[in-house]
Amino acid sequence: MKLNVPFVRSQFPAFSEPTLKGWAFFENAGGSYPCEQFIDRLTDFYRKNKVQPYYPYPASQRAGELMDSSYERMAAYLNVTASEIHYGPSTTLNVYVLANAMRPMWKDGDEIVVSCQDHEANAGAWRKLATRGIKIIEWPVDPQTGVLDVQDLKGLISNKTKMLAFPHCSNVIGHINPVKEISEIAHQHGALCVVDGVAYAPHALPDLKNLGADIYLFSLYKTYGPHLGLMYVDKALIGQLENQSHFLKKASPEIC
Ligand SMILES: Cc1ncc(COP(=O)(O)O)c(C=O)c1O
Image 1 (tube, helix red, strand yellow):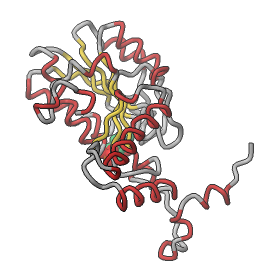
Image 2: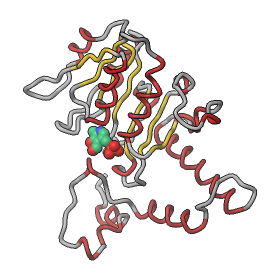
Image 3: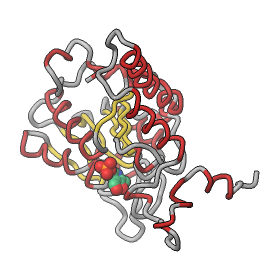
Image 4: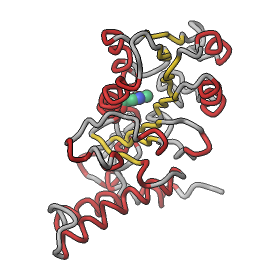
C-alpha cells in the first residue's frame, strides 16, 4: 500500500502553520507536533467539560465518560484492559513513582538488573535504589555495536533477581530488543520486566499481552498526543505496589 503523504500531512496543523514554514522537524525523541484530532478533542474538553468528573450534572457526567473512554481506547490499542492503563506527567516521573512503589516488595540485598542501553528515565530511579538496600546488576552493551546480548543476561540473572529494566528499542542505535524472549527469561527466574517503550511506540503501538512485559511505559507526546506518560501495569501486579497517592485510593489502586 502506498502512503498517501498529502492526506497524512493534512492531519497535522503544524504543516500549514505559517510560523513553521521552511522548517523540518526531526526531533521524535524530544516530542512530536500533535495531530488535528487530538487538538480538537482537547480543546473541546477544555471548553465544555473541564470540571470535576462524575458529579450529577451533564458537563461533569460527560467529563467522566470522556476520561473513561481515554483508558478504554488506549487499552484497546495496546491489547490490555482499561484498569491496567495509568497516566502520569512523563515516563521519567512514572518510573520514579514506580521505583518507590516497588521498593517495599523487595528485601534488603535483593537484586535488580538494569540495562546500560536504557535512557536515564528507566535507569536513574532504579540505580538510586542502591542507597535503599537493593543490589544493582548492570547489563552491559557490546562496546562496538551498542547491542544488548541476551546470552549475557543469562549470566547475570538469578533467583535473587526481582526485576529487570530494559528498553524495547534503543534511542541511540535504533535496535529493537526481543522483549518476549527477554521477558520469558526473567519470568523463569521469578523476576518482573519493566520495559521502556518510548523510542518504539512512535513507530508502532505494541501488542502488550503478546510482548509479555509486566510493566511498559511510553510518552504520549511522542506519539502525536497530549503531554502525558502512559504506563501499563499487569493487573496481577498492581495490588502488590505500595500506594503512592491519596491514602483513600488504597482500596482501588487501579485509579491511583
Ligand atoms: C528512550 C527514552 N526513554 C524515556 C524517555 C523519557 O521520556 P519522558 O520525556 O516522557 O520522561 C526518553 C526521552 O527522550 C527517551 O528517549
